[in-house]
Length: 176
Image 1 (cartoon, one colour):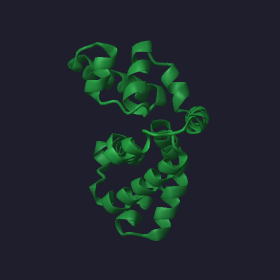
Image 2 (image 1 turned 60 degrees about the vertical axis):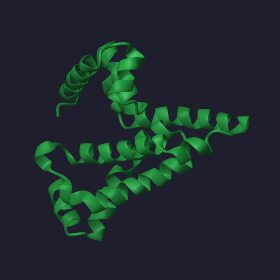
Image 3 (image 1 turned 90 degrees about the horizontal axis):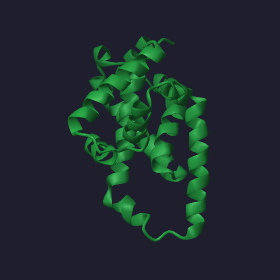
């Protein structure tokens, strides 16, 4: 099934197309989510929530604005970031025992391998060091552009320009 066929069937709310879409993209979306959340159970919930949003909002996907995967990735990443910023999530993480921290470190190390397995990390390593740092903060750690500006101690406008330039460089490497 081609991507165009999947999109048309999804817009018609076809269950089989949804299953195909899930099989194609669940692992790579989960890798991004787990890298942000560092909690497997929570990441699985966010993945499910992301696919529900994709299902409900497929009509808002516009092929002229970007690839389907990019649109889905933004939904998953934004859902994870929203969860990270939620008061309930932050309160649930305040009183953890040290055993949980060891578990989080183990999960964090596994997520690096998952990201490398889908090939993104290799392309990012080819970018300039400033791009690597910026993409790490914005896309893998879930920083806002303002937070990245403060962390890197550069003006917000520079962060926006560098982000755009770095993404363009990444597109060149990916030949997209």
